[in-house]
Image 1 (tube, rainbow, N blue to C red):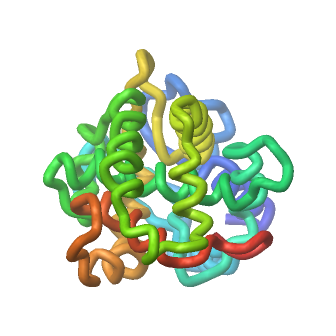
Image 2 (cartoon, rainbow, N blue to C red):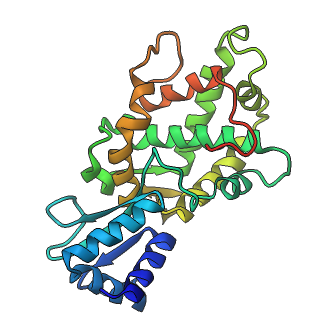
Length: 265
């Protein structure tokens, strides 16, 4: 693999997070097919160099075949860029994501709150509610939910959970204030923005008619990162906190200050 070819591959991966090698060329552009061929036939030393390059950007380059996960055909390969949770990734633009969640200037805290809460609740729908472990990436093909289900879950979380918390425990908490200030229309508006953001980030696939499915990339990242990011929260004491499973992780965020402007989310 030449430096030029490696550069093309890295640029494509950084933009799309995935390259697939498969016999069926439908739905793929010419560049992906060519790059998939290069990756499939790349010598081991070239793959090591490419992996080290991606590591420097804050990603792990993961290669999957039909023996690794469901949904990949025989003799096919999928090359994914999985985020490293312990490394700052400058290519994942949090300010831009927050702008997608909250278009009004000066409301970064509100955007972070809604993004975090919807992210955890959508995980609850495709893991906890399906009795699925974080390491069960094979079940990504069946990990679907409806937009209305996500909206309903947020309403229950706010009305039956957040608003029933002891106000003295969460006094002057920005997260609590943002969620309890919801007047009825906010949930649907932020749900729409969140889902569009997740689709653009290759974490969800829009199947039409208000149905969304987890992507293989999302399932892989969850398996790789759960133990280092979410599991410590899940193992802490949940007594008296609303929610169950991944939904319960939203409650501890109410007793922590919201992430400040410009901080890493």
